[in-house]
Image (cartoon, rainbow, N blue to C red; front, side, top):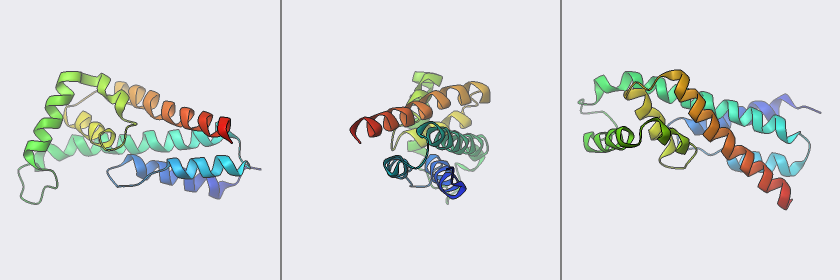
Length: 145
C-alpha cells in the first residue's frame, strides 16, 4: 500500500539534500527499501524527482547570486567561486554528471546557473546523474537485503 507520508518525507529529504543545505537522503531511501512496504521503482522515482527539483533551485540561485559576490556577507569566498567557475568552464556541462557526488555536486549546480547553462540541458544531465545514483543505491540495497 502506498503511504503518502513515506513519499512526502522522502521527496522532501531528497529535495533538501540537493540544495545547498547539508542533508542526505540516501539513508532514508535505504531504510524505506529495507522495510519492504513500498515498491522500489516508486521510491526511486520520488527521490529522483525531489533531488532534481532541488538542483533546479540551485540553478536558479546561481542565476541570481553573481550580483552579490562582492558583498561582505556573501557566504562563498571570491577565490573559491572563481575556482569553481574555472573548473566548470574547463569541463563544461558534462561536469553536471557529477552532480550526484557529495561535497562537489551541489556547488556544481549553482555554478551552472551562474554560468548560464541552458536549463533544458542542465535538467537532462542532472536527471541522469541523480536517478543513476538512486538506481544504483536501490539495486545494491535490494541485492544485499
